[in-house]
Image 1 (cartoon, rainbow over the protein chains, first blue to last red):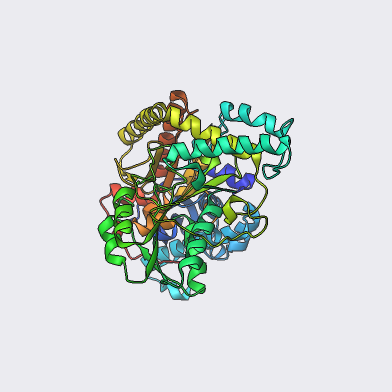
Image 2 (cartoon, rainbow over the protein chains, first blue to last red):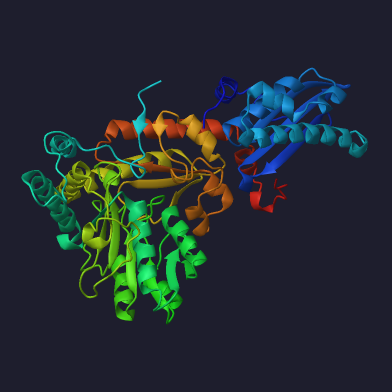
Length: 131
Length: 404
């Protein structure tokens, strides 16, 4: 399996690894994937007002899954929630030059972003389906 | 980046210099066709082939007349299974094999199913082995062939071949074993071990690639095969095609060296494997050995690192030449069929790595490998949400994962 330079770079130097307090009101947590499928992503955001001020991840998965979630945390910081909701997996595919067999990693990252945002919103009492 | 370390001896082995040296003249001045009976060039080649045959036969306790040269074990498996099925198909249509066999056996079995045979695929136990009792239970009136591998290529577990062979002999069922990983590494005696057919491959035993042999019993019983390659009637009509003399010379020499060095090779591999496993198991928690701890090839160590995914693990130890699952399936994302058949869960199957040590592996190689493995697992576990949950006391099996 040949990896792109960007995947290797994120794999070797993953950004924003770690965990935020998942019980805090200003933190949204998304956990997606399943161990038996070979990938689980946990992505967390910390929100002030409408802006994502911090993002952290932990990923069990291949190099492309690690890179996709690492990239996602980079892109999330500083974005508004609505803006973050528009992040699409194809942007991740392009940025990391993911081959077709690894597209599911980008889909998982997009799912993790949306799950984290919805978790945050539900904590604020909003109905996530309206997001 | 340090020099890469080769730890994939189950995939292939380097050619031993003693083997190479003996092969070289047969690429040059000695070029006759072993089938040419009318001149000295042919006789010389035939003599070299004859010596190769003797050496192979000696290693496995056979007679040289029972050795059929092939291109390797895939061909040997195809010839043995299809050859037996087509020859004895009128006697019965039932074949017994194992879910943990190499794809060459499984795919040949599937082909035979399409041709009207019925195949029982036995599940191995949790250590990857089969018992003679299990085979006995699966036997039917119309069973004509049992195919159980001697030692597994992914986990190294060794089957009780002598007992399974004795059962087959008693029931009058032919017994074929894939000896690719076992021959040259552990003692093999086709007489004492009650084997009717056995395949072996040159490149797994420090010989050249593209050559192998099929042992076909000549008496008690005399096994007959339908040839899969028609032509000049070479190899007692079972495998036509001009013999690859240099490769056969190499295979023969490789067998001779394996026989002479078997004890040294085994002690060397065992000491390296023990050294490696002691380091890895001593430094890391949640590490599992796949396969049988004792009934196992001395050079094989298949380990699952919980909460670390196999492909990211291989990236993390990119300096080490190892396999995740078997080399034949590592291009796909499917977890190993061998581990699955043993009941190893998906998650552990995804996180398994096979380390193979061999004649040219050094203690320095093993130390460097263990160090890199330990560092990679620790780093990836810092990244792993599963490991974090386990440290928090979460039972992962109780979580509703959204499978995708």
